[in-house]
Image (cartoon, rainbow, N blue to C red; front, side):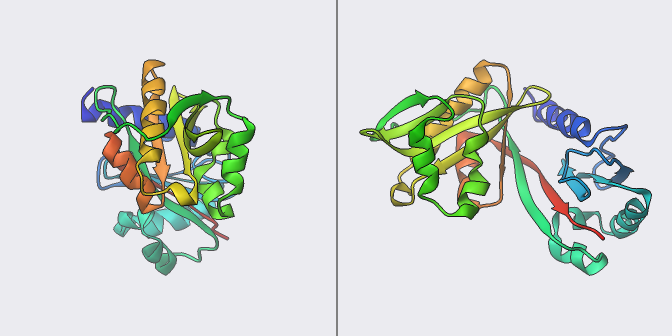
Length: 239
């Protein structure tokens, strides 16, 4: 798969989630559409997606579309820059920006063997809940491990899960990844080991692995596995 086809698959996903007749424009431009049912953001919010240098934005009504178009016409880079967006619009709450990275079928880089065994666990296994209970609420929200639909690929020490990765199946045959490591087991490559197993599983099923992350450490894991950063996602509350 070429980089262009990888980008096209990602664009197909987000154009579909945007609903309606939304489509990415040429690189360097921004398209803003009315879409009350947009999957780019929480209901009633404004969603801004960048892919390959192009911006696709949705708003729940025409008034907010006009506000966004005015703000993005001269500064499309504001779609991924919260400071620029706040300077141009009366923004309330913000989610993101999160980096959007994708893995081509032939790009997976193997991880080094982990010191513990890697096992498949059911997505709601009690040991995964114990792992999630040992981190902060912000880390739980970032990882979103409780919503996976795939098996969890877990690095264990005895019966304790040190790191785990799985994915939730999204529309357009996309696998949205989730990964979490226990605080006392970080920095040992365990998340990468678990994620490599999950990525191989998703690719074998013909899915497009998507890794969405704000935290630099999480983005580094994705890059080391061969994921390519193609864009960003940003959601804002706009009165």
